[in-house]
Image (tube, rainbow, N blue to C red):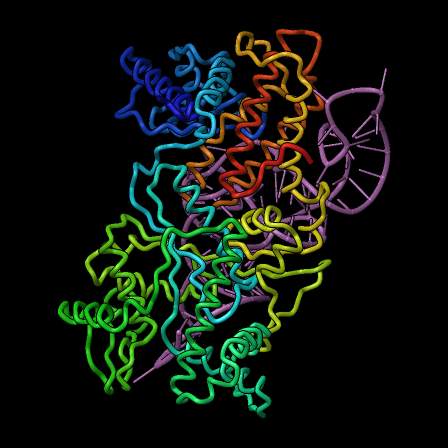
Amino acid sequence: MQKNLQAAVEAELINYLAESLKKAVYEGKLELAEIPEINIEIPREKEHGDYATNIALVLAGKAGLNPRQLAEIIIDNFETEIVEEISIAGPGFINLKLKNDWLYKNLNLIKELGDDYGRVEAGQGKKVQVEFVSANPTGPLHVGHSRGAVVGDVTAAILAAAGYDVEREYYINDAGNQMDILAESTLLRYQELLGEDIELPENIYAGAYVKEIAAELKAEYGADLKTKAETEQLEICREYAYQKMLKNIERDLAEFGIEFDNWFSERTLHPDKIQQAIASLREKGYIYEQEEALWFKSTEFGDDKDRVVIKSDGSATYLAADIAYHLDKLERGFDKLINVWGADHHGYIPRMQAVIEAFGYDRETLEVIVVQMVTLLRNGKKMPMSKRAGSFVTMRDVNQEVGTDAARYYYIMRSTDSHLDFDLELAKEQSSSNPVYYVQYAHARIHSILDNADLTASADNLDLLVDPAEIDLLKMLARLPEEVTLSAESRQPHHLTTYAYDLATAFHSFYNNCRVNTDDQNLAQARLYLVDAARQVLKNVLTLLGISAPEKM
RNA sequence: GCGCCCGUAGCUCAGCCCGGAUAGAGCAACGGACUUCUAAUCCGUAGGCCACAGGUUCGAAUCCUGUCGGGCGCGCCA
C-alpha cells in the first residue's frame, strides 16, 4: 500500500513533467541531450500554486531558448489528471495547482492506517542502534543529560517509524577510576556518620546523594563495616552505591518516558574483551609501543594524534574500553551505530571513527549526533551550576517542576546543532507562550467537538471540504509521512515539533473559520471525518515525541 | 594555534542538506473577534544591510574562501 500520498503525488508530477519534455523533444519542438533531474517545491506564496518547478530556468541555457518560451513548450505538452491548473510565472517558473482529490483520498488513508499513519519504509528494515545518555552511575542524572536523553529517545522512535529496526542502548561506565571515587566518597560519608572527623579530598563527589547512600549503609551495617579490611569496605561501598545510582537513573529515565532495550555494562569488557580488541588491532598493525604504553595509530584514519590505549602502568584507558565496546556493537550486526553525545565530547568523534575504520568497517557506520549545550534559565536569568560543588539541578527536579510533556517538548524543539535556552518559568507556563500546550489543546479541542457531535463522521461527501482553512488543514495532514522521513534521515527531531505546531495552527485556524457541528448534515459529517483525521495525526505525532495527547484540558 | 557548533525581527529560534519569486514563527508591543463545538484560540498592524568581506551563478540567508564575534573541545582523565 502507498503510505505516503504526498510523495506519490510529487513523484507523479515530476514524471509528467519529464514526459512533457520527452514529448516536446520527440516532436522536434525542443533539443535536449538528456532529460535532467526535475525538482519541484512547495512555493512560499499560496498564489504560486501547490507546487512550482524551476526546470525551465535550469534548462533554458542548454535548450537555447528563453525560460518563458521553454516553459510554454512544457505546458503545451503537459497532460495529467491530478493538476487543475498549470501556468507560467515570473522569470519562467511553472506553477501547478492540484485538484483536491488526493487530499480527500489521504483522509481515507489516515482512517485506514490509524496509529500507523506516518510510518514509512525509508529504513527498509535496516538494523540501527541508538546509544544515548550513558552517564556514569556516580550520581543522579542532571539537567545536562536531559536533552541528550530526549533527543536519543525521540530519534530512536522516529527511526523506528521510518522503517528502521531500532535498538536503544545505555552504556554503563561501571568500571574505572570514577567508581573508585564513588566508593571512597561513600565510605567517607559513612565514617562521618559514625562520628569520625573526615577530610574531603579535592576530587570527591560532594553531592547530597552520597550522604543518603551512606546513611542507608549505616542503617544496614551499623558500625560493622569498620571491622572489615579497608579494600573490603570500599568494595561494599562501591557496589552498594553503584546499584543504588543505577536504579536511580533507571527510575528517573522511566519517569521521563525513556526506556532502553539494553543496558550494557562496561565491566563485561574487562579484561578479556579489551585485550582481544587491542590484539585484533595489533594484528592489523595499528598498535605500537612507546614509552612503555601501547598506542593506537588513529592518525592513519584522520585523527589529530595517536591515542594511548594501555597506559604505562598496564591499565586500560577509557578509549580501550570504548574500542572493545564498539567492536562488540559492530559484531552484533548493526548496519548503523548512532551515538548521541553532548557537544563537550565532540572531539572524540575522529578517534572513534578511526576505530571503526581500523576494524574494516566504513567510518560512516558510526554516526554521532552532537547535541549542543543547554542553558537553564529562570525568568531569563542563568542558573549557576557547578558539578564540583554538587550544586547541579537534577533532571528529575526539572521534570517535576515543569512536567514531562513540556520538558520533552522543550528539549527537542530546536535543532540539535543549536544551543538551547531552557527557561523554567516559560516551560511551566500554561499559556499561549508555551507551544506544547498549544499543540495538546488542539487535540483536546477535537475531542470536545467529537463529544458534542450528534452525527457520525462520513466520507461520503468529502468534496464539500473546500474552505481555504479546510484545504490548509488537509494539506498539513498529508505532510506527516514526509516529515517523518525528513526527521529520520536528517536525525533532527525538531522538524517534528515544528510540524506538530504547524498542524495545531492549521487546526485552530480551521476551528475558528468552520463550524463542525452545523445544521448542514452532509457538511457536518464530512467535517467530522476531517476532524477525526486531524485527531489521529496529532495523536500520532505527539506519540512519536513521547508527549501525551490529552482528551480534556 | 587547531577542530566542531552557532551568528537571521527587541528576545528565543525555523528556513541552509537539495540556490529561486515579496525571508518565516513564537514571545514582547499595538489593534480587533466569545448569545456559536474549549478565548490555553483566531484575525490584523508594526518590526530585517539574514555578522562582515569577497567569490561561484541568470539568481545566494542557502554553495565556496576569508575575517570578526559567541559556545564547546583539544590528557598515559572519565
